Length: 145
Image (cartoon, rainbow, N blue to C red; front, side, top):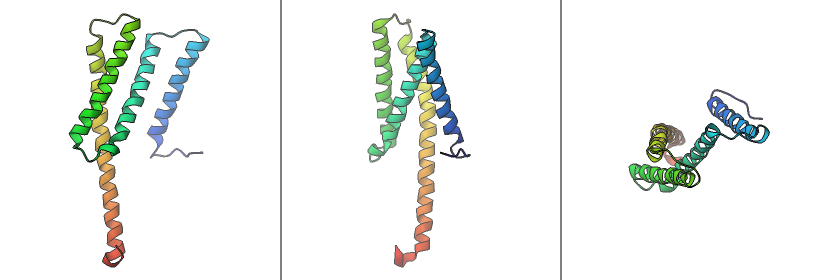
């Protein structure tokens, strides 16, 4: 059993919230035979979050490239996915006149905020790890390194 502490509290809350929300959507779909726009929107947000987390998690594979190029390619992959989903949905039901623009902004703004926060935390972790390595090297001395 994992102990909840101050280091994993927010992640634990997010995980529990996600499980409860997805459970509610599935339960309503099965028991009440209700599957409306808000349930569809929540599922789309969940799958886009999965896609964004996956794409961001692949950064380590592209560290030799400039960061801005990496971010731009990651964003391009995801925005193409968003537009493809919008196009696919439009094949089966009518879209509003500004559906593509709305999806663009609905994804871009939260994603941009998330990317900034993500890369700040990544570089903060790298800085802390480098400081720890420096301390270890200092303690081991020049003969032991």
